[in-house]
Length: 98
Image (cartoon, rainbow, N blue to C red; front, top):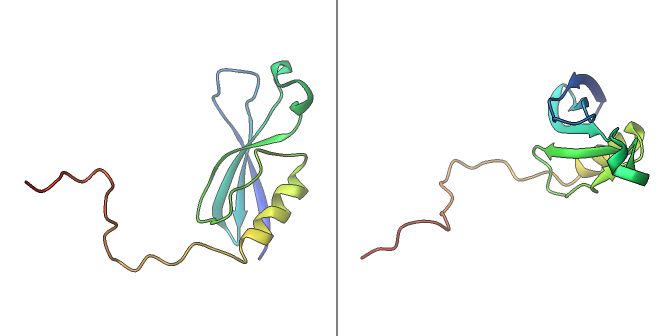
């Protein structure tokens, strides 16, 4: 699969505004934010994973660069979430039957 990135500004309320949409074959699979604020210390300049879509494997908290993020996506695509079968998912918060 081809992995691509699309730059986007993120309104974080801090200096961390440089975002990147991660696309696999044109489909959104993750949103990253570069940690630019000095408060991040030695993690400054790395890419924080804000969210992922359709991936079974949890990503590391940060990636040192976009190449590392792309490699994680490639490896994660080998173990995708199962396709939705149309059946409802039982809710853990369902009201008890009286």
